[in-house]
Length: 411
Image (cartoon, rainbow, N blue to C red; front, top):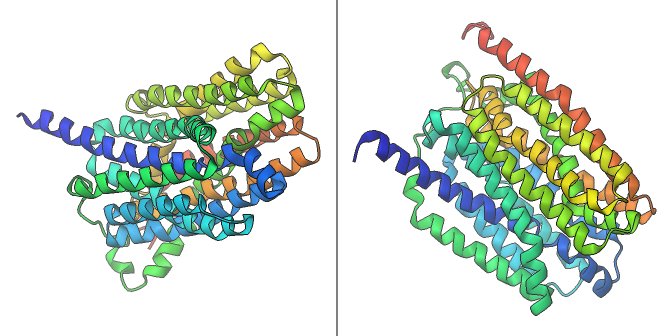
């Protein structure tokens, strides 16, 4: 077998394993929200209280993610990935046995800690183990697999709950996650790469100061803000758009569900296109800025025209495509920001912004729905996308400026 063919086979295997892990993590992340109407009736809790479960999950994930990034650089991404998937899967399965609402909260915290490892571990493995010429497509596979996990979860969980009950649904997806963890363990040799020191020799005696210097740099903080804003918007779409469309605009439940599915499928398709685009352009910031601008505009349009049922699915799908195209270029920008630092530490910190946005969104959107203001849901989503646009430009400018500074100039 020729070297290029061997490299392609290796890269494909790595992408497949990481894609499978990311897909599974997103199914597990979104396993609970489709059951909110059932849990609302069974436990007699408000939508705000149900949103608190999601908030606890993402707060734990966000706080754990920065630490997970450091552990990835120190102990190896494959170890963290296996441990995190096992913990997340077991916690979701145990939620299916919960006797009361209050048991959901500590289990959500445990699940969030398990979830915290995926982005720093996945993206570190891809960045080190996949050829540079295929890196944009590798990031696309990672993003597409996660989006397909989100798209699968509502249908899978709702079907299992319909033919059994909500406890069976959570038990099945939790056990399936443990099976995937076993598959990763068997193939763990493909996910190992040589550890690269996360600090320079001059900083070796002060690793904590070196880490604070890295995460406190403007380029990394701007990347963190970008993830917080886009995650806030995405969480609003995924968690409460169906409820907003049904209660605020009188859209039929099946059509509203189809609208969310269209958004997620469109996002997956956009990521595929974005992966090829990211491997062929140097202007990744323009791709990211254009995509989220279009997505925000379409969400604002949705707030005005969602009452026209025929517009729901195409507008949601187009918004998904626009947002999806940005993902591979976004990760390339973050990889540039990680130059000279630990890859896991940077990805772990900036993706904790994703969890910040995802943890705060359910409380706001749940409160809007409880106060009979579903129209405001789409306006808030559009505003979050709009706030993300300038952060992309700052990431690009500051990363470029830092690359122009001589290696020892900052010391």
